[in-house]
Image: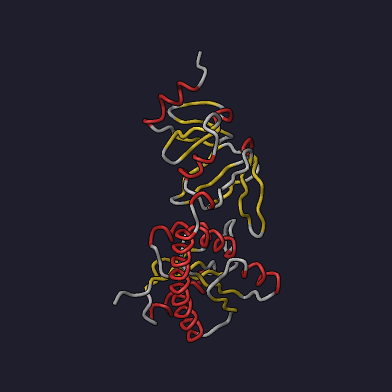
Amino acid sequence: MAKVKLLIAEDDVVIAQNLALSLEEMGYEVCSVVSTGEELLLEVHKFKPDLAILDITLEGKLDGIDTAAILSRSSEIPFIFMTALSDKDTIDRAKLTSPHAYLVKPFDVRTLQSSIEVAIHNASLRQHHTSTADAESTAETPLAEQPANYLLQNALFVKVRNRLEKISLDNIVWAEAQDIYCNIKTPQHIYLVSQSLKNLEQRLPGKDFMRVHRSYLVRLTAIEAIEDNNILIGGKSIPIGNTHKDSLLKRLQII
């Protein structure tokens, strides 16, 4: 029987190593241990674990709750929180992501093991019920009566911690693929979003944005210079893919 695969996000190296060792002694396979939410989201796509264990306090821009929110929107992988934080505000934020368990440090290995087993079991039940409900809903609701998806034409909303931030399309200068996620760059921030670059490209107006590489799309008016097959925008060098170069040059006024 295949081992249950676990992915751990914990920024304390000692705690992370001890946790991984304890889990392996229990018979689990720890496929990766990371210290940031950004790393966990990439590793999830790579290893496809059965469960993710997240500390709420992490290095990087995303804390454990932010990471879990993105994870829950982009996959069906269950996750549990482990943290020393038990204040009401933290718990209220955590509840919004519908975690499968919430462990307050310190906890013993027996509690951890039971939480993992229950989380995986409940996740399996949730997925079964969701699949059944979706099938029944699709069968019973005429296509013409199913709700349409709407997109605000001049802006996107991005989940940042416990709120949705509005990003004007005019403020986006480039976007970069990160496996099944992507980074959106504005003059003020870089946002990690649970959309592939392909999906984001479909949401942005083609007259303003262009794919210039398999991993990048840019706002054409943000281009400051082109040098040695690279686009320069705000100090960042963005490569131009061979299959995109001719199309890009045709859209620029070159004299």
